[in-house]
Each structure stands twice: as structure tokens, then as C-alpha cells.
Length: 491
Image (cartoon, rainbow, N blue to C red; front, side):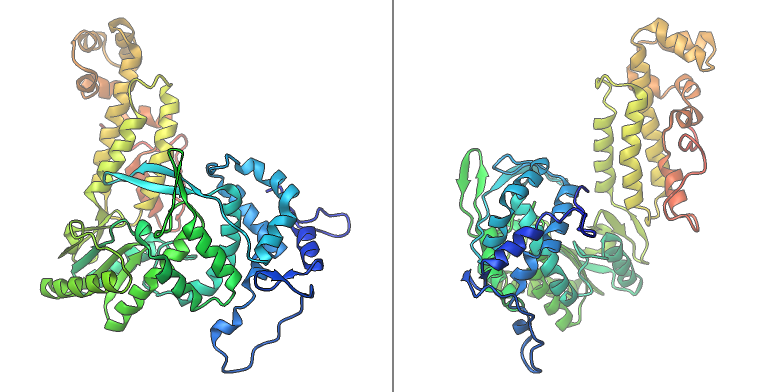
């Protein structure tokens, strides 16, 4: 990663080692000022002192050279776009070399001030736009350093039914628990959708939750400044009084911290639930029970946490009528792919296989494989063989369209078909038919010339075969035994 820890006398020093030592020599310590300059070992507190008293010196851990070096490596690995100052990840190392003493000093005395975030709108899968806030590269470095200190303290206190953006947990763990609830007879789901959650987070409520567990006031001040940093959009800096913008390393942890109150309340009531970030499903046995839970939980979220429930998107319904993390649950705990997920996959593949892109078919197939293998890997636990076989057929027809259009005229088209085993009279019949590319791609002659075996030779990965390989005993990585991709059945 270009950053190595000191190894022996001749090894390269960490980026922040000397800067931290210099700050400590000059006495930068304590709450927002300078101290005596000594960096003493903290003694273990006496029994009976609250946990919060154990956390008075987190900023020394944040500014620790090993922690900052690890944060630099993570920011560099994650790459990402530039913020409002235009600094790229490649520019970060020279900036650190020139400014590390000042950065560490500002962290230790609590005076660090983040810059505004850059507002970027991206399309949401279900329609509409989602606004991201892209911090500067330096602010991402500081947020990552804070995250590495806070996460080991906060995450172990979170609910076992919370799965989003947590180390060692993920979407498939949430789905596994949801399947168990459905299999146990909890087949009605209270599906709660929080309206613009990341834009509605109340800063005072969130900081109160953080102050319960963190005693270092310097760290609390800097976190609040990150929350209140303005958003630059269309050349105008907009002040923010609520919300934690998506785009920074710290936002998911802070979101989980706030919603931990919801988790604890649901646990206190004895509910069976799964929460992934702001997506919360509660499982009950009847519609009437679901309606009661929806009303009481909505009152809790809007009254205590000052969040807003989207009543148009939230619902109480049988599990099979709702989707969770892109999947559809069955009454017996079965798992399928939600229809919206299939529609989004087709939309993405349509963009990749546009006939007017002007790229070689082999390059297009490589782009298709890059997307479909990741998509199938995510849905590897779903029972979806039939769906994937139909998607395979549709995808091959899309690619046949592309290859036929590359021929442009009747003569090259007929020559291509004949070269791939189609009799001359049938090849010319199709070439001169005057049909559109989609209709021609569905013809028997096109299937004969570009069979599944032909696509296998081109390197196309069959979705259904890849899914079967992922679920094969002892083959979690989905390694394919057939060179050049996977075929699958015609058409």
C-alpha cells in the first residue's frame, strides 16, 4: 500500500510517527488546549466507576500514529472521488508529509474543523434521487481514524438483530434469521420504511447517545462538527441542522448508534425482527398483531427519535408480498429473488448490451460477466434455478442482437450464419427477411449459429450454472471446471 511500518533502524517510518512525537513533546494534550506535555500511562479505574469514565482519552488513540497509518491505508484502498477542495487520494500522501504535525495537533487539542461535503445526487433503485455527501480526502482520513477507535467500543453493544454495516455481519446473516422466523410461523411482516433517514437524523439526539458512551469532549466536538459541516451544491454552501450525509466512513456507525434505541425497544417488547441499516422488518403471526406493532413502533420512532415513517412505503403484509434486501421470503422460510431485483438486473444488462455502443462482442461479454457473477453471488442462497435459466435465454438473445447488427448488411450476415453451420438457403432467407434485430435474434437460424456452446467459447458465464456451482458441496467460491466460461442449455 506504499505505507510501511518502521522495521529496525533502517526501516521506513510511519507517515505520522514523528509528527505525533513532536506534538507530545510540545505538550499538545488535554481538552482543547496544551498540558504539561507528559504522556503518562492511565491507571485502571477503581471498581464502581461508570464505563463512561473509561473513555476520557479516545483522541490520543485517534491521533496514534499506527491508527492514522491504518486509516490512510483504508482511505487509499477505498479510493473515491475528490471533495470540495479537489484533492484526490493520490494527493493525500504528499499533503500528509507537509501537514501531519498540524493535523495531529488539531486532533489532540480538539480544534480540527472539517470542510463542507460535496453534494452529489445519484438515482435510487426504486426511482427518485439520493443525495450523497462526499467529504474531502483529509476529512475521510480523520473520519476513518475516529471510526477505528469508536467501532470496537460501540459495535459490541449493538443488538444481535442488527446486521447492516457491522464487522462480521452482512445481508445473508439477516436473511438467514428472517427465514428462521418465517419457518417458525411468523409469516406476517411489519415492513417499516424510514423516510429520508440519513437526512432526518437529529443531531442533539445522536450526540446524546454518543456522549453516554464516550467521555472525551474533544472527540465529541469534532464528531458534531462533522455532522454540522455544510453541503456544497451548485456552488452554494448549505448549512445543515439535521442529518448525517451518506458518503463518509463514519455515517453508518452513527446511524446504527441512533437506531440502537429502536433495537433495544423491540427487544424489550420481545419482538422478532431484523434490521439492516434503516431497513427494519418485524415478524408477527397475524395481520391484527402487525397493525398494532406498526402503530406503536411508528409512535416510538416519530416521538422519541424524531424520525419520520414513510406511510406509503411501509406496510403490514404476508412475507411473500414484501421484499427484504432484494429477496422474497416464502411462508416456509424459502428464499427467492424479488421481482424488482430481476427488473433492475435486466435494466443494467440492457445498458451493457446496447447495440449502438460500438465495442467488440468479446469486450461486452466480459462486462456482462463482471456484473452477472457478482449479482448471482449475492443471490446464491435463493431458490431461483428457473428464473436464472430464463434470464440466461433472454441475455443470449440480447447478445445475438448485437452480433447480428455488427454484420450491418445482408451479405456479411449470411456469410456469418453459414460460417457457423447454417445452410446457405436459410442464412439468406434470414438475412433478406427485413425483420428487426430482436426478431432475427429469436429465429432458429440465429440460435443454430450462436448456440449456448458458441457463447461458452466466447467466455459467457451462464447464470444458472454459476449459481449451481456456488451451491455445490465444498465449492463456496463458485469455481467453474469448464474453461472459457459456462454454457447452459439452449436457446
